[in-house]
Image (cartoon, rainbow over all chains, first blue to last red; front, top):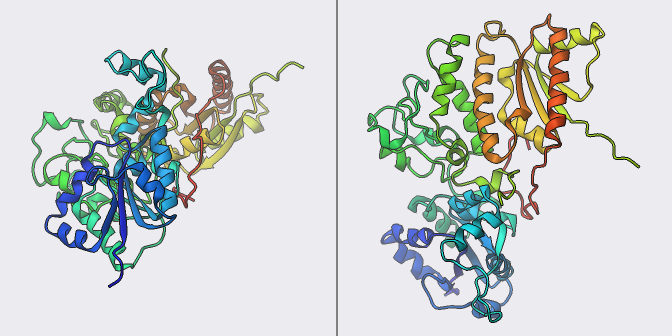
Length: 316
Length: 154
């Protein structure tokens, strides 16, 4: 019997949700575990950085990295894992495009450290000298994995959904690997697999999810919810829209949409109606769009580091 | 040697039916106006994607002018209305990014308004000179792998 492929899973600036998401495979997880050898997975097995350093180059078949890159230690670790691995997979929205922690790029590093230290967190070693356990330095900005190392594949989602994780393991274990840079999700928009029906094709109001119990059959955009479905990849099974929540874009944009925020601006510009179009409706249209609170955070909830180069400087 | 004064770079997306013809008229009428803009003629201002505006900024533009037909005059009935809403939303997003929203300007210029085109260009150049050059913080390093994110048009 051939040796089982060696798999590593690592977390950087993440919440742990991606590590837990493997459990969602259910009994299929037992099949997967029987066919792989886990050589490094801080959330699961007691292995240390020194163990990884002792591995031969490219001896790990695939390393799955989740989390945004936020500290110098994150960067060192992913370079180390890249050297030791044949394949590196960006696992989850943070590793793919920066994720929710990437929204911190709207504040400068100095602002973040100030906010943390006024909450009792001291990022620098205490007086009395350097300590080995001092926290690693914070990077100026959060980064996606591909900003630092070559990424072979992407499993998107926050956290990745079981069908998408299944696609990854099917490919890894069968050896039938897709082309480099493949994203394990659909290329078509989420709307294609959403069971809701579009009727009006206009956006005549903007409501937030807590303000409305939506009709279960009608398109959420038609009902005034800012759903990212038109620009976001399918593959998740439209879990959120089915549950009455608008898509917030965790699977990332379709290849054709490109920048999800700019694509949404384009889409909403076409959809918004406040009465008959014309100069008489301009003020009402603007007011309608003003109800969209924090458009930047809404459009780039999972992808700010990948798309937005902020011009904002420190407020301090 | 004294540093050359800042001359803002402008990309002007002009619709072929109104603003583009207006810009032409400004030229054939020999109206003097600043030569800071690179005009790009499009069929309709409604064709201007927000992506193009950002691409102009990423490519070094300090301001982007979008010229369309006056309300009611759009050759395609409602293209300029869509543009107006997109620009309104785009400017809000730019402000959140830390980019001055005034760097994107939408103007209605008819085919007979060569003088207005010249005035808009003078005003816009003056405003951008006040704002100064746009500095987008570039990524420190481009991805080393084949790009994970295929971009439109690449």
